[in-house]
Image 1 (cartoon, rainbow, N blue to C red):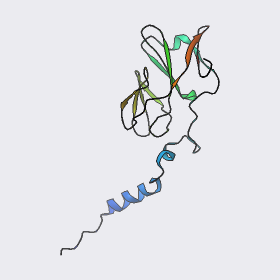
Image 2 (image 1 turned 120 degrees about the horizontal axis):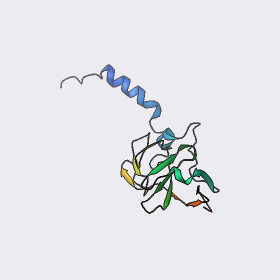
Image 3 (image 1 turned 60 degrees about the vertical axis):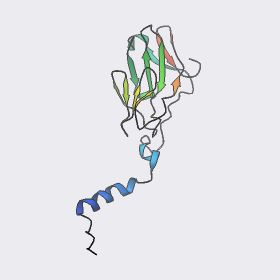
Image 4 (image 1 turned 45 degrees about the vertical axis):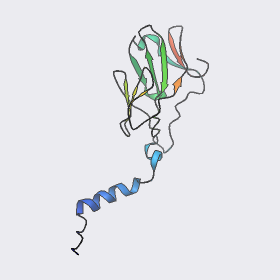
Length: 141
């Protein structure tokens, strides 16, 4: 029987680099400080002027973990920007597509639906309304 080839240096180093994060799952995607970011406002949150979200567009509020979109008729929708795959805060909006930095999941900011896996669940929708020219999101909105 021929001798089994030994592992290359590259294989050994690659395995050593991956070993510290193996088995962490969602914890590897947690927000800074090790805790998953809290995406759901517990009270109404004023996100600013209503004019900040154009018809057919979307705006990402990174500091609130919220995206707000406006359809062609002017109706507002809001979604949590915590990825439903690994709990990472989504920090990039390209047009009306949200892009998760951890594993590349993509979501439609107008519907919350997944447009690219690995996520399989849509984003959590949040109550949203306009009041006195301001966008209000969260319970009681």
